[in-house]
Image 1 (cartoon, one colour):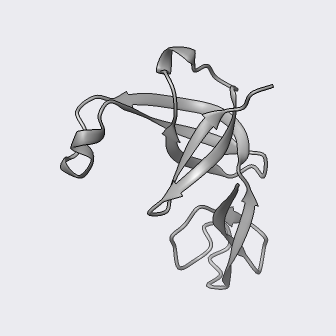
Image 2 (cartoon, helix red, strand yellow):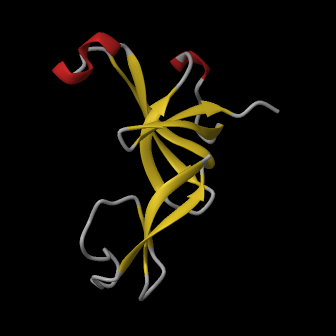
Image 3 (cartoon, one colour):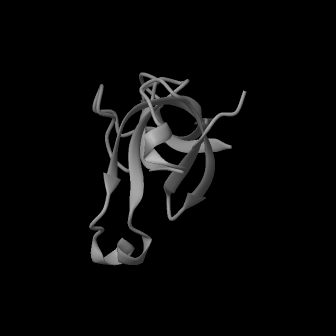
Length: 107
């Protein structure tokens, strides 16, 4: 699965968006891009008391993933938090309302 991102036409910087200007060079020329959804787990936390919108879904794990493209993205992680560790290989498996869900890669 691929991740939707913004790519600056002026300097090539990737950004998860949304934004109107490139964070690196301030160019307004941003294009939609797709990058592979494979990456590694950087950090995570378990949400036990969810905001009202997600109340029926708690507990769930929210994580920061570093994609192979270098882009950092926030999303949910499937599975038990006890099985997570830094640098764990993960892969995007679904997207709902521009939010991605990742799962551990199986060897």
